[in-house]
Image 1 (cartoon, rainbow, N blue to C red):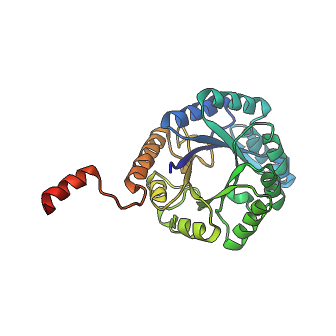
Image 2 (image 1 turned 90 degrees about the vertical axis):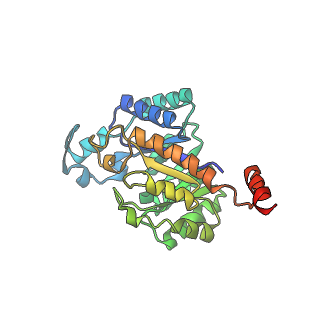
Image 3 (image 1 turned 180 degrees about the vertical axis):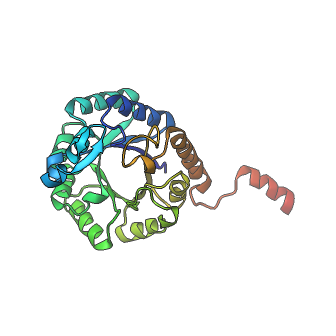
Amino acid sequence: MSTFIVAEIGINHNGDIVLAKKLIDAAVVAGCDAVKFQKRTVDKVYSKEYLDGPRKSPWGETQRDQKEGLEFSKEEYDKIDVYCKEKGIEWYASAWDVDSQRFLQQYDCKYNKVASAMLTNDQLLEEIAKEGKYTFIATGMSNYDEIDHAVEIFKKYKCSFELMHCNSVYPMPMEDANLKVIRGLKERYGCKVGYSGHEAGTLVSVCAVAAGATSIERHITMDRNMYGSDQKASIEPYELCKLVKTIRDVEKIMGNGEKVLTAAEEEVKKKLRG
């Protein structure tokens, strides 16, 4: 089975549609299956007190300036929709509030995503599950009771889903990956389990595929030194190309699990066993 590889653009476009298209191009060149964005209704996700607080950014001096600067409007999402169709790559987004999920419903996206931070937001989960689209559910910061509850909601609406093992530290120390959880999640919930990574480099993500992950999601950036809270936990285009190629090689290496002799091994057998 081919691993589903997602390039998480998220908010690394820094509110710039030209940069967003460059990141989409990088995902296409690397051979990714999809790109993903994030959508927020700023006044619904954050309190007025928080938004009025100080924060220096390219867009101003307050938290509101920064949050609104990172958000794409319908005009930009229309361009993303058209551009991805032209490039032949799927796109979807993780909504951080119900209004944002309803905004995304106007597009014919094939997938939905529940961000780790939203796994306990029942109202949002209900809105997503009711759509019936295949949904990736990130499990960072969550215990089994919380995951159980989220899974119950998706099962109630008979909505297909795939859990994603995740550690929500940005960037995540390699030794905290705990990839054996992938098997544990598969056994507990009887579903596909992917991996959403925030570590430096590509090794952990490749190991996740060997550990049974059916999907891989990684944040991507044109340059880790760019402005943005997610940039340091992202991989650059050359690393993305390396990751996709290595994952495809690992798929070949892992095989299908059946004990068979290749034609070459049959020839060796004739020589050594007579």
